Amino acid sequence: MAFIRKRGKKYCVVYKVKDENGIEHQKSETYTTQKEADTRKKEIEYKMSVGKFEVPKFVRLKELIEEYVKIYGHDKWSVSTYDGNMAVINNYIIPTIGDTRLSDIDNHFMEKYYKELLEMPAVKSTRNKDGNRKISTAVVNGIHKILRSCFRQAVKWGLMDKNPAVDATVPKHKKQKREIWTAEMLMQALDACENKWLKVAFHLSFTATLRLGELLGLTWDCVDISEEAIEENRTYILINKEVERVSKNAVDMLNSKDIILIFPSMRKNNKTVRVLKTPKTESSIRKVYIPRSVAQCLADLKKEQDEIIEALGSEYQNYNLVMATTFGLPIGDSYLRDQMQRIIDKLGLPDVVFHSLRHTSVTYKLKLSGGDIKAVQGDSGHAQADMV
Image (cartoon, rainbow, N blue to C red):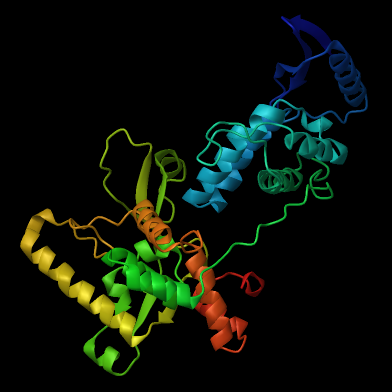
């Protein structure tokens, strides 16, 4: 039978069970209050008496999440998704409800938890440097997404009877409408742009609907800008990889999954590395035709880059990147963002993020195609048409 043993301020319900070989082992479950321990002791003794008692594999939520990350996360997540999800888990889920017993988590618990989160302080970040902001509805929705997936796996594994997050009411997150540049604004920025890398980035983001990581990961073997192609106006680029900065921990934990190569770090103590990796989804792999003028811009860039490679010889680290520094390494995304901000400040243009150029591209392609969503989706690489 079971008995209760007090350890400091905690109460342990102790009982004996036999393994598959008939050998008896002592197990214990820890609770915060004696009332919880008494309730669990009676439950164990009753289930033992009717022959339906099973030793729980996981008692606390943090134990389940650890197993969820180890099995599901390692299999399904990319390195960047792993970084983002682990930040949410370690910053918000484990510190707040990690010690909660799985048996105490139901629909009511989840709704109450989501509501309480909105009154809690958000972790410090670039957007919350002073730590004065509270957790946003966007973060709560992200927490809900992870927990719903975690509980879905727990039900599948037979660790929970039902998913308590499925029908839980989540605070509504109203997405802010992002301002985008018009084509005229983009032309104005291009005319004022003196930075060759930013100019190439503007051209490709608008005409080929590229994400910034895809732009930085573009290599010359995926670009057809031959004289014949330019003459016949059939130049194109193939998008099949991207550059991202991810944590070294994510790379190690996921065994370099989806990573083509890791670029050398400038500092030995860096906790992150830049990697060249395959896209997150198959729909992101696509062939996009580009205008003759943009192709000519790339041809000029290639000629200049070849001259640098010849001059530097072995000092040039040749990864065949289109967007490469003087010594061959990938151009930094922060560098392009800073250069873009200078143009915005100089011309007084709407203060948009670089990704908004992709939205501008989609908008104008929809106009030019007469609303052909499928055609635009092929260029943009969106996984679903409703995202377009």
